[in-house]
Image (tube, rainbow, N blue to C red; front, side, top):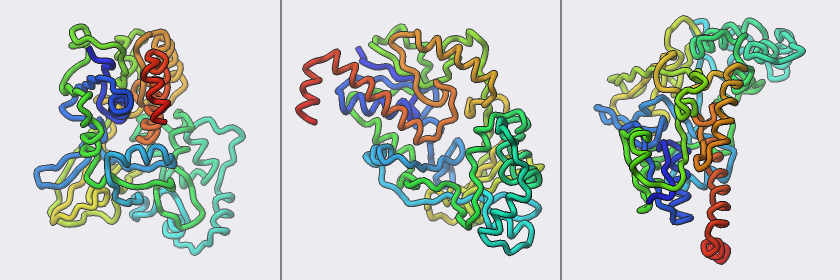
Length: 379
């Protein structure tokens, strides 16, 4: 008898498996339909011996000390600050838009104070910020919106930004200084030996059993367990009772290049006529030294593995119907991006899983007075 059956071996499932096994002594069965642990953060060595991220770049960053210190139990870190360029008007310029972006693009020599005036002069103030288009034109005007955001967003989502929730482009800031880091979080680093090694360490507890290439529905009636933690698509769990929740997917085309360096930064965005949205060179992320390098092109797709919940009001309304079913389902805990239909970063998923663990711990303590007393003594 397992105490918990955990569906999905990505961040949400792995964090909960580790906490429940190591802190509460629970017996865990964690399963995944894929042939590996780590979810979309899975990395591996390609045929040339280069460490790659199979499902596109995963850049770790967080402002949460709790999350960073928790993951630090399972990996050493390599300091890394992510930088991105965008291919615009035949130039590679920094994104998010900053002082250097504008000066290079227009051949200007503005100062930070003058850039504030420049943005104010081109902005189209909106009384109400409702869509992704509103967010950008309200800050930097129509021309920069067209150059940097509209085509990229349309490729990514197959929806015009004027029809997308404001949260999509609100994630990308605009700066008046020369800070060209993509993120400004307190903690920015990459697992020194890769994400997969970190997950292996996380799931190494003897109370954790792993089954891969397994659909939970095939074993749920034959393997006894007390409660389930589900991190898969919530609509799938309920057999699409109200219809499918819309997602965007990605196709990855990996390529090994016979040169030590291929592009000037880890990621180059293509907000233009190219069918792909960005190209990533992994050696920037991993710090690996190798005579060759590996890149990946990302092509947004309508079909395939679910990656990005589509942020529109009608989809939120549909999710809420599934959420009501989940709330009424006893013995099952829904955790993670797919199970809660939210576009979480990795650190947000870890934070959510740690919060769920604390709630489960309280429940387990009430269930077991002896364990409760033991934890009090240890604390």
